[in-house]
Image (cartoon, rainbow, N blue to C red; front, side):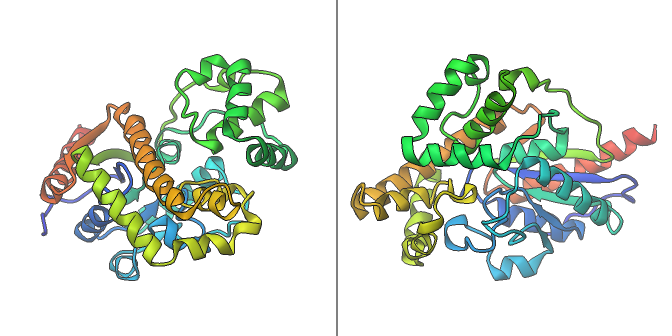
Length: 317
């Protein structure tokens, strides 16, 4: 489908396509990129790593060739990477895209990464890689709940709204607590920064049971494509931060003899569904997101074109 904008786009626009895993964000972002003759920046924190192919649901080769993508396969799992580095990298890439086009597409389900580019990050203290490694080792030795308990005691305010099922979020908060002796929440101001582009936020959703069926089917396909074998290749490096993610840690537990393969598959599907639920909780808090049924590609396209036209007119006044 093709929808034309009435007039010339005079200002830069970042169109963000967000939503839960398996909802169809990649396909929608490609439709937008083709119509706007634009490029796509990935904000999926798992798709940066070139070694992780099967378990991260990266765009297919056909999808990658349909529109130019940035930050897919850009890192090794052995590289230290965080949301602050992503913010800097993404803003540099966007500057380049905006030199060629008035629009750019950002797609992904990692809410913190999307927000970092759109609204900026709080100025958090730097912490040592040694402390980060220490916490990762504790995570694997004692389990996530041990770290959560420490965080709840040291920063109950942050725990009221934090995703305590996300190991990376818990570790990041504890890094600050241990290195400064102050609560992580004391550094979070929530102050938004001004960006040199307009932001259009589009969210994709579908009925929960249908989404969960898609997640289960995708997981079955990943397993058939060799997910267990892929995870086994990295078992000796399982403590790396990049591997503390749904789709791999469940298999590491199986490889460690903690449970059988059937239980690993059950956990893979359950945790993927829980991850999708957490993603929706994050994005639903953002009132700037305009929500659409995942199949309503035409509705999304019309809305984006309309927003570009109306915001261009507003900016001219």
